[in-house]
Length: 489
Image 1 (cartoon, rainbow, N blue to C red):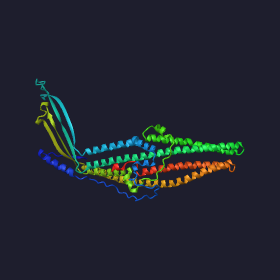
Image 2: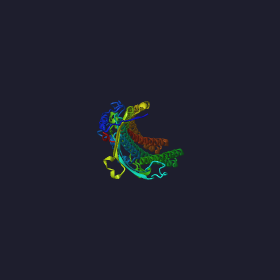
Image 3: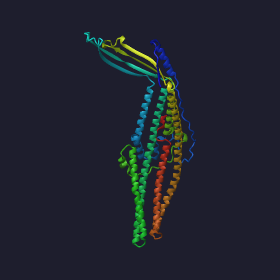
Image 4: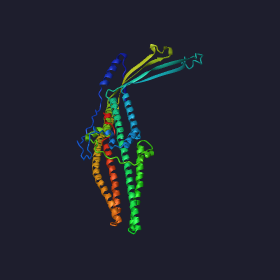
């Protein structure tokens, strides 16, 4: 329930009253907690191995991490995506919305002034007696005009800081939307890179499959010739043809995956899915991991990752809204007034006697609604607690993501090193088995096994190369790379 009290004084006392209220507003405190950035202990160094020689972010900035791959096509795709991606445009629109909301909150601190003007014409009988006309009295009527124009003003004095806390919350909301936009940018650059690497990996696997298919067709032809010469069995021919068909069957699914990767890149760039097919269809090498990376230390995450910064801003907004709610425990002071001109004739519009004004401070207080106010405060305090817990969870998740990618990179490097050796020995085994088979010193099963093993290891090596690069992309994303930290500081 809201009680309103209007205080009216003589003209001579009004300036003094205004001075008192304005001074109270300017010196008034802001109720509610003052926000302090939450402290979250982080380790001094990463727990897992750092598989790449680390350089500090100052030496190799994370803002444009994709340049370390030295792939001009990848860099061009990411730059185009930053310009045209629809998710990023949506996030930018939300930033503008939050900025406008902040302007609205700020406007309540200033007086509001409205202009108004009106004209009214009325007509009435001179005599108010209903029987005057019937008794032969006067039936004369009079017409009157009234012209009114002026200004109305109102100003809420923010003595207890509720409005200032609203502005503080709006500022934090704006910062949160900015950080959300940066987080979209981090995700976008990583997704473009991952899809591009996947595309090149699929193209590499298609090339490997076709090369092995050609080799297997050659072996099948050789087997048929030996069968026709009586040096091989029909079983050898059947096994050779079966291997050719099995390898050929894998190529269409790889081609589908490659095409879908191109379609995904098209959508990420804000274009039609097939728009990039002419540019990306030619096969190029998989972008490889660089010899070093700007990994930094765990404490860098707190200032680098947009999702952590967003969670902190959300906690700030929640804390400020506690102050907004607590301000409702106290009375609200409002100064209203108007000044204008009212005249029955245009000719006397600017006469001093036509002026009008009024002024009056008022007080409103939710005296009998304190139960609801305290419940609103409790609700805001619970929301702040949730935001702080979410901040802690976000930090822990960020640390885990970096540790996950570091261990994945380290173990994938070991795996790839072993696969490189396996491919070398499998190629030797294929050459030797074909030579021995041609000379009649071994059966065709050894040739089949050697060719099958070579295909499997070459495919695994291509996947390992892809995994190394995508794991590095995941590391850059986990570190919060993809935007310029200096512009925020």
